[in-house]
Length: 306
Image (cartoon, rainbow, N blue to C red):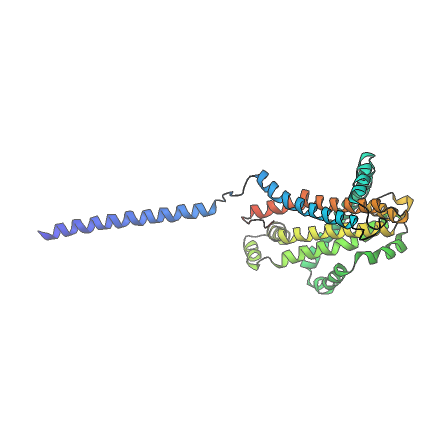
């Protein structure tokens, strides 16, 4: 009776194939689940801090060594290139008597106010240009031209319009930062895949909902790049305005401090002001923009390159 035996064997083979297929399906599902889970393989925070801390310190030490050698070899007179020690003594003196913090706060407060207004105006302008094609064709090239225009060229015009007041300084900051913020937002939104907009429309999102829930989140990396560039332009514009528009009624900011050192032929003060300007710029980048960028990239499963 070979037939029953063959039927039994066929049934056994069928069961075995079904089990193998189920196991393969389970393995594929487990693999897909593993892919969806974002495993944080980054090194500890202290190790990341040290890895980013040592290279700048080494570069700074090399720069100080070259500066000291140039001073000892008398490459330039003392009134042009003072010694690192004299600049350090001047720096410590300004920190000890509180003058350093006073001039930093004067400039940083102006920069933050001007940058905040620039973000507001630049964001609104970018959204309007993105939504209204006529504005994109007419104002878009003007924004690019304004962005490439050196901010220092606006200082005489701002003084002519507003006199030696804080309004002149804020005008220079706005003219330097607003185009960068608007262009950054436009660049980010123009790179959003059209498929996302179609999906949002199919789901019933209106123009405001599509902008708020789809376009702006997708354009966030480009927008952040525009904000970073906008802050850089704000800070440069502010320093240019403070260097040129000097008056006792404006207070003493970092730019005015450098101009004061030039007027009094005090090179250590000039170098100290330059160091403070540099430290503020680096501090804003490390304390705000770098953590925000890392957070955005990490949430999207991307690895920061720096």
